[in-house]
Length: 226
Image (cartoon, rainbow, N blue to C red; front, top):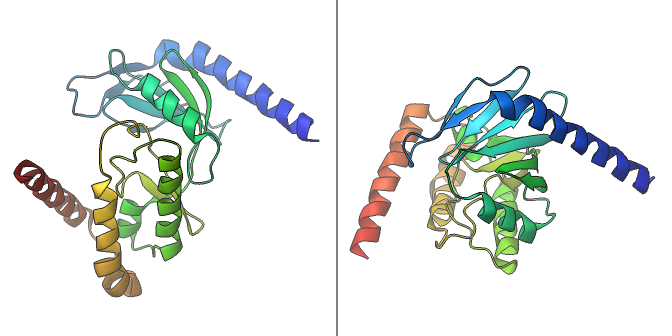
């Protein structure tokens, strides 16, 4: 039975690779105008859906393959080889995605379903302590694998069925202290858990964005003065 399941999974993966090569890649257009802004995506072929963009890559999904996501790096943007290495070290862990295929700036990953902690705050969804614990455990595991959790914040960690997930690990080879996650946990334990969580208060998006901007400014000042 295990062999049969493995064969089915491999057949589905090969089908997805073929569709990516023959349908998505020839038609999608990615461009990076400014290195510190999200890349621009044009002409996404039907029925593909754009899930999101970052400074280096875009992520797509096909409705016939709901458990996979396709990440494509924009031409000339760095990071593909590093991300492949990060996934190689991570292997399989319940707190992270998994890489099934990597070639020519294309990654096929296990798609993580859930709500980011940033969106939980915006929607007034209660974030259990278990979610924070799960993310801490996942980050500790990554350190054991020789990685450096970097740029972990409310928009790239997720809650699914009361459990925590880490969505973006592409920067885990970069130097960094992980201070963003430490600061988020301070907010969680000092403000959110005692004050906001009991009220299930939805924080307006503009207020959340103002808070993020103020945090980045303060963090920049502290780094320059250090």
